[in-house]
Image 1 (cartoon, rainbow, N blue to C red):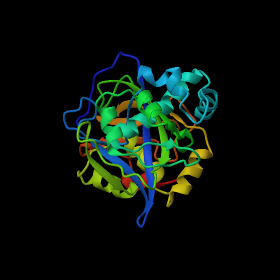
Image 2 (image 1 turned 90 degrees about the horizontal axis):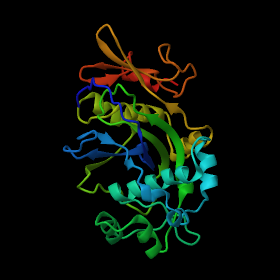
Image 3 (image 1 turned 60 degrees about the vertical axis):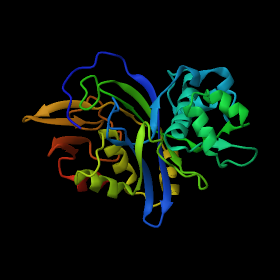
Length: 295
């Protein structure tokens, strides 16, 4: 990926992403999928599954297929200015994108909060069946309790890697034990389960490409040993709003985040480094990647 220098004048579009995690013998692992090299958004990069919110995601008939009301989800998301139906649509988009991109469906069937999904259902969605119709046909209720609001990132107007702006809500979610995440070979071409530190080490070595939200998200997860610890952290706080502010210092591109001395928001937003610098064709904290693990 190369740095961008242009200004994006269009308003950010709502998007949702799932930071899927699991326990393993290596400790906490996080799911990354490699975007198709020809993708117009972060082509070839490894990202958390996600995508744009569709108009259909807020339709009343679809919202009736959630385990929680829009009012409840609105309160959980912690964005007072957002309409309840639009808040609920973000949960729908997160669940839909996880199913489309990696075949994992967060669902509640009867009293069971996790159930298997056959490949035919995913293929039907990819072939054009509306998500609402698929859920109704299979008598599925979406399990929004599994999706914990984690952070909100808004692409800056002076982007560093993007050609479009997004207002993305990231949700933390444990991977269902009896479902297997698998890339779709269309939007995504590889599925990677890595510990956060291993993912950052592969990025530093040039084996994978990461965008700043993924770098900072992996750093945030690195201290946690188990899914339970990461979930407890998400439940203990409101999702921070992260609006990166880029600038140049001594000819070097810098991204700073809330709490940094150069950022307009003084309160710290993430328990990580407050800035990344572009060096050696990748972003890293000023003190190197070890600084990302400071709490």
